[in-house]
Image (cartoon, rainbow, N blue to C red; front, side, top):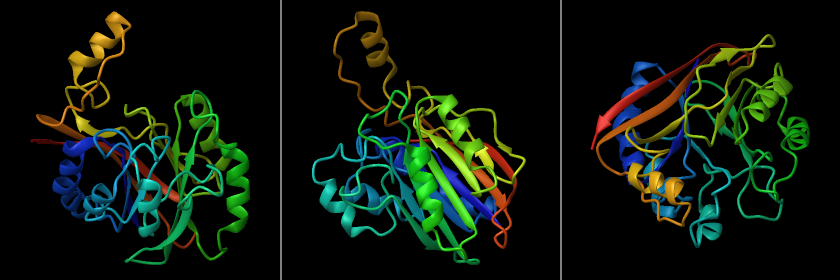
Length: 262
C-alpha cells in the first residue's frame, strides 16, 4: 500500500498547487490515501472553512499545528469537519480532536495523529511524548496503520520522536520548518521517518513569504509585514510511504518535489 503525505500548504498559491498536482500524484505513486498539513493555508496563517473545503478536494485528512487558531472563527468551524485534526497535545477542552481513525478506500483504516513539539514552540502544548504514550493505548488494536504528523521546530526533537515511536507506528512525518530534509528512511523497527517533509509554496521565497519583505525584516530588525508569495513557480514537497496494511510496518519511504507555475 502507498500513502502520500504533503508538507505545509502556504496560502492561495499552495492550495492551488495541491488541487492541480495531487490527483496526478495519486496516480503516479498509486497512493490510496493522502494526508496534507494545511495549517498555513489561509493567507499563510492558520485555516478557515473555505480553505479546508478546498483542500478536502484532494486530501483524505488535513493536519495542523501551532497556527491552528490564527484565523478568527476557526475554533467553531473546525467542529464541522471530521477529517481535520488539530494537535492532540493541545488542551483537551480546545475544539476539534487531535487524532482519528479514517477509512482507507483500498483496505482497512488509517489512524492519523497530529502533534505539536515543545522546543522553541508554544509553551501551552503538553508533552508530545507522554501524549503519544496515552494515544497508543487508545487506538483500537485492529488498526495497524498509524501515521503521526509531528509539527515541531527542533530537528533533534523530531528525530527523537521517530526513534521513540519506532516499531509502534507506521510513520512519523515532521512538519513546520518548510524545508525538506534529506533523511527519508525506515527505522529498524519498521517505522518510516522524515525529519521535515517541506512545504507547498513559492519556490523563490523565504518559507513561502516574499523574499524582499523577509530580508528587510532581518536586515533592519524592525517589524515588517510578510506577505505570502502567491504566484510564480510553486513547489509541492511531499513523501510517499510504502507499507503493509496487515502489519502496519513500513517498507519504503521517499521524498519528492513537484512544480507548477501560477
